Length: 70
Image (cartoon, rainbow, N blue to C red):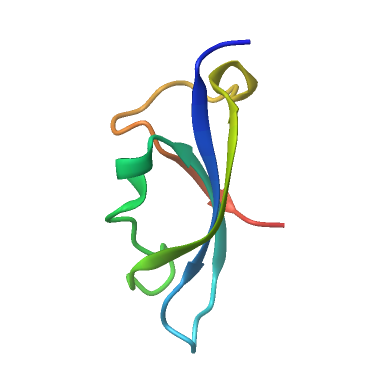
């Protein structure tokens, strides 16, 4: 297993939107994420550590990978 990173469940802070996302990255990477739908701030509702090797997407800067939650 590779170095650890954080997996987060994020929710849009605008109650009219409430879009949910998943993201992977370092702790500071989650500070300024915005909702793709309404451009409001995203708030983390849960974190978990995971292996960086488990993430198969190519690296982008900053190292946050985000997708809509199921």
